[in-house]
Image 1: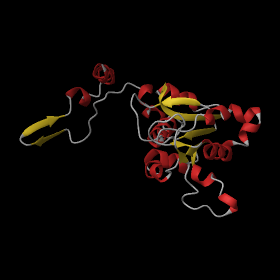
Image 2 (image 1 turned 90 degrees about the vertical axis):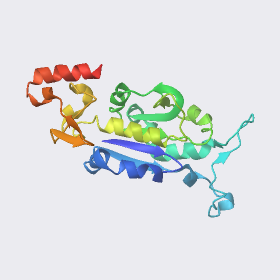
Image 3 (image 1 turned 120 degrees about the vertical axis):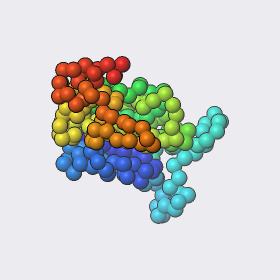
Image 4 (image 1 turned 180 degrees about the horizontal axis):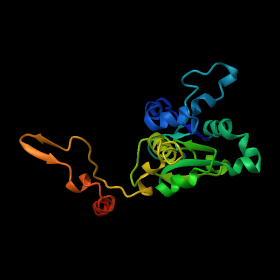
Length: 228
């Protein structure tokens, strides 16, 4: 089983997606587990008192100037420590644990990335916000930077969901049938289902005849051409 440890200020933004469809089933069947750690919960209260909202703030102005706010290092460090600190104390645990920071300048994620991460039992996903997270976190915990595309997002929550989804659907048993993984078969970007034909605003729309022949070799050739 893979446990995804998600470090995020907004855990509620992930759960609606991760508690549905294939990922939900994978959680139920204990192929994966998802745990959330909010850095705000790791802020030390002043003088031992119960933290107020102001006390639980984890962002601060960046050194060197510039716009926006930066998430402080210590609350994130403590969240990671809570998630996998015990596992990182021995070589066997470190070998099965991977920490990921989402960054637009990170390595582009691909299906090969998802496959390479399947071998880990614990994957820590650090979701940045605002102008980012204090870089000293990376000096304490070795991690890799991953990007889900050549663009910038508001936070790391969407990339975390993408990565969890991509890895989960590649685990044996997650899809019900392993041939559902697209690159393991001949797949086309265009797919069709019943009815065989219908009309919309007076125009007829039909399923391509080749798909109705039952000739699998020719169907695969048709699909291969559609991929180009």
